[in-house]
Image 1: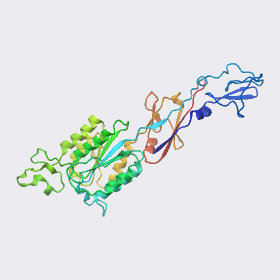
Image 2: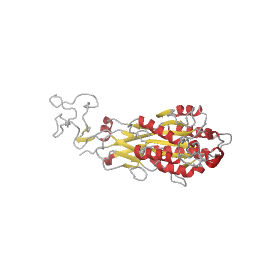
Image 3: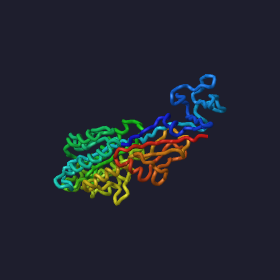
Length: 391
């Protein structure tokens, strides 16, 4: 989590906007803005006749008001101190759409662990790292009482959801089919219900097989969506598909994902677990339709073991954390802004440092290694200071 520290306007007046005026042996200090104090001893300033002078007036050794020293209401000319808040983009809202079909009870690549246990362990590690920076939610499918029905979400998106998500995963016993299209559609409805929160919205699909449960698919024969072909309807007598439950629901699922991306602005990441290699073409199509394909041999994230699954989740989560910070208003002088991460000054460098995103000077972006630092899941302190130019 990034902690943003703000200094008060008064702090910056005193640190950056002090003007020193020396008359003979007498040096007086005038701040850039109005002051409630006339001197270090707290006594009001008076002239030679004992008349009360304005707080920031400048006097000579005889107590006479010097010319052109009348204080200005909004600060000295050329120095307009201002404060601006640093606010990172709102945490993204991400639904983990998790396939808990019966095949998730198959043995995983880690000795003594099922695919489901590997998924729980990898998910726990990533939630522990990113739960303060990403609003995670959970939708497991199919429903516990109908193997081809996708339920609503079990955990609505929010930050610090690790324990709730772990509890749901830990009390689930995988079984049933893979109604992926319905599950993603339900996740999109849950995101839509949140309304316009200002957060980007995403779906991360984790599945160990091809989508199915399309009862009314008009395909004869259909493509089998099961690893064990003996259970597929296309192997019934005469090759007729009497019941579409186990036909590959590739067209409908890809269509739902594409509509979510194009019409609702919700991108979908696709992660294929051990056992999905035979459906690589379908998963590639789904990943491309979702708008977030990975740059690699497959468009989907091929997580064929627990280490690869953890790495895929970490990579995806890191990519969702914004390194852009909006400013409440443009600074007085854009060239007198200084950014620090954990007390270290960040150079203004468009390749490895920070820079403004455009010439409105209302948003800055951390780049290169400094952006990666913000995305590592650790706590960081991001501060900004500014100076004002005094004429």
